[in-house]
Image (cartoon, rainbow, N blue to C red):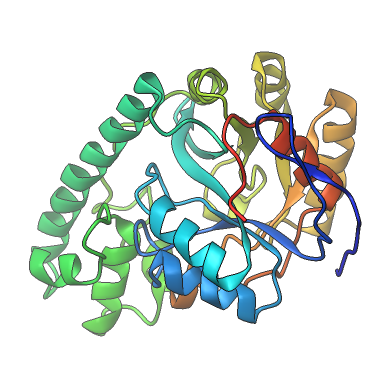
Length: 301
């Protein structure tokens, strides 16, 4: 859906209106710094080619790609919303929290993200060890699939399995060998999502629940969990996402309206790793204005 608006987007300082004409806004993407297949600069360039005006870089548990993406955004003429997808848990259910425009130097949030990255690395090595007992697979093969700054995770293991011919694609690997209930899966450190909401808010960020009804990925949280998170300061729900059915989207919109939460849409783009396409779902300029007005740091333009 194409959108056009003259809505002024206010910077994170709340002082300077930015009179952009906003057409297409994608608030959830990944680069090689986590589990995407492109560098941050390549991702921004592709966003421009895809006709996006605003892109959010939201790599898992890291801000390491922000600087490169910011430089590319200024060259390509794409506005960059700097963010992170925080790995969390809700009573044992794996969930993700998008944090937009937070202070990357906030010590509490930075420490939590560092702990998650360290745990992911150890978990990946343990999973490769388990898989290697039954399949031709080495740690070196898996590591070669990741970028220099990336924290190695299941997507990189999946890509190595595909290269070896043990799975047809990432989705097949995730559904079988890398499934949470399978014999090769290893859990990793992740904060409770309510605690993560508090950390993001304290760092000046804007917390939005990523794909809350993506049941094809595994168990999803109850509506009561979302209500509790709204009480804790959750700002929005990612509603328009390819992993949501039309019924999911309709119910999430109702819940967002009831709880006073923002509604976002995005691609959750990973490059060649998944079928998601940049801009396949978008966020309205009015919602972006709310996010930018609440964030501690500015959008890069």
